[in-house]
Amino acid sequence: LLTSVRKAVLSEDQEAGMAEMRPMKGSVPNQLAMGAAGGYTTTPLSVSGFALPPAVQWAGGTWEIIGDDSQVLVTILKQNEELITEPGSLLSSGGYFEPTIVMGGMGAGCKRSCCAGESCFRVAYKNNLPAEQTVTLTPSYPAKIIPLDMAQHPGGVNLTRAAWMSSFGRQHEFDLAQAPSCLAACCGGQGCFYTTLKGPGMTFVNAGGTALKRTLAPGEVVVVDTMALVAWESTVQIDVQTVGGFMMMCCGGSGCFNTKLTGPGLIIVASMSGDRMRTAYMPYTQQGGGGGGGGRAEEAAVEQGAEGGAGERDARHGHAEEGGGV
Image 1: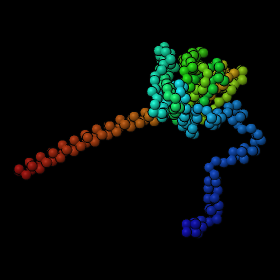
Image 2: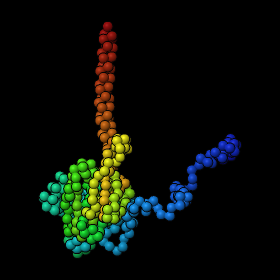
Image 3: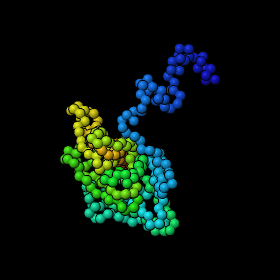
């Protein structure tokens, strides 16, 4: 019935115009077909030198990463095996664990807390039973989990604040590295110190949004946003450079400096790191706090109005009694 009415009301030209305005079938256009006219045979991602971390598929090991955007790490611990995690990462575990707090030394814990912005403590889950036990972990914010086989990085890796999530065993060594220059310390987005991690075995880092990795050749340079960096190999040199001229610094939306990385070595960047997520949500949290204060002010105003209304009613009542007495 609606189709008949529409055809009766709309002319053929109007019907053709509406047909042009209708959305395309399918949610995403065919990118290969749209880009075929350019003559490119490789993807822009390949040309950029970056690559998505390979999809982690379970291959018979004692750990598995599941989920899409906000991922979960499921581990199996055999007898006497231990898992070290960031505080607050636990999602579930077997009922026979007795977690303990480790610091790696009072000095190391204080340095991490005071200088690198990390937690002073680590949580250790050790299986003391003959039967296998499971521990399931999740990042502290919606993020993907990236496994790193530290045997492939004997010199260690450097991590940004809140990037590390978990490691198997206590053989990993956490330490601090100083920024290479005062300019990098003040404007590089990593602060004066950042966390270094060395040792064999598997470790897991978290990165929000879309994570990309790239292995730089010796002398190869790449520039990234100061909030995009997640991890970089110890062989990679880190520095800063200006984003451009005065107008770009003031109006470009990227601040005054970008992070400059020089190979060789692995780097990992993310589109929504923890620092960037906190920066993006900060105005809304502040607005929420202000709204709460406004709500309290409105409540006070309502109470004041109620008291004023009560006083007015009492005055009218007294006036009526006076009139009655007269």
